[in-house]
Picture: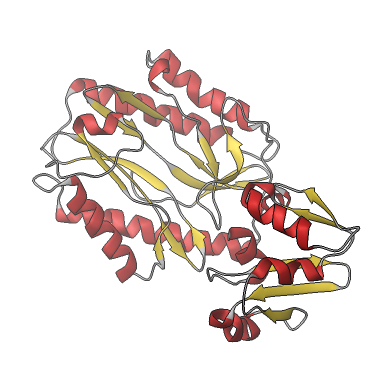
Length: 324
């Protein structure tokens, strides 16, 4: 529904939009019709559908119609072809709207910045409460409750709190394991504000890390700074990833950094562009991306540090301010 929200501002669970020469139609059911009339610009025709949406949508189609095949089921595609008039051609247009959504305008950046600031405030809250002696799940639930208290619509994804050896799994699910003193705790969370997401990771410790933990942390921190320094409009996602990855390789942990360096963030928490070894994207001014290298030591601990930044012509604006 991200494309629909970006096009219209509608955030309900039932809606289809058709846009083309001479047509701007928004189809929804009784539950959302009145809200849509109040929300959408007057240029949209609100079509209230009382039964199945596909037959009513098919009646409005003419000529060549693009659709996002990654978000259209085989059944829906089949029904549209069966119901549409002769001469209607459906053509794949996957990624078209995500490409239009990619570069953020000033209002979008400020919404993401507000979400990032709120997330920073939640980090301060959970650290002040202390980590040792509490379960991963308890910390995650408290963090998400605090987000909502501060005004977030929702978390932008299920928060990760992974202590000790659980931190070696990049997307660990918080469990009942009690956090010990001196253990690294990978905390990855974000909030939704005005429909836009944030994403930030910090590796925290209640007590003193041992020398091995500290060494790995410094390597990841140096890699993240190298990645941040490489961010600017025109840089390739592959090149920025390589700069950060080289630091981890030189530190002897290259095989323990198995994911990409970052990704775009906006209405969805994972969007274009990609910043990874296989990325084919060049960064554009106005992209909002994460820079999040990590090292994961099986059976022992993990370290990930993630900031959310806006790409500029000569560098970046960092939206994440909680200390590293």
